Image (cartoon, rainbow, N blue to C red; front, side, top):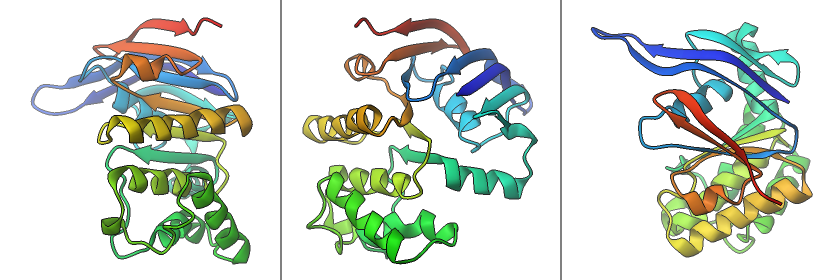
Length: 226
């Protein structure tokens, strides 16, 4: 479970800018949540706080009963690699590495680069439909294929939670459908908790629940109709 209590984020400067203004909510295990709202509403900022990519100005965040804000930098790094997976809109693949090597990077960071990790990476690339592209480099792959490599990379260490920040923003409709189908299958079959930022209302409808933000505050929290 994710438990967020009164989280605030203020970016300092000549004029302090409040990005999050006291956000509170919980996310159950295996839940698929969409974060929506217009640009500048605080969606990505909130995701970064949850994913230990940034630190809130105040408030509390607990993930699986761990106070993640109390962790040291070393502990945060281990927690991210062990329990969290990330998919971003820009893919963030290493150009000099093959698809298979890119998927293996988080395992390498944990010191788990062995035959089991390599087999898992191959299995993940097969799951996302890239079994025939494992030795291709990013510049030899389409945008949709690169995003699928990024999804496989996010899953290599068997995370409990997947964070996705506008994962379809740079994709065409067909590639977006493939990515979202993968997310839904992972959530349904692997019971993976997913929190996804999206601007697309039709994509948000695929989630169990939609949390809408405006000016750094939650203005609507809606569960999907069964």
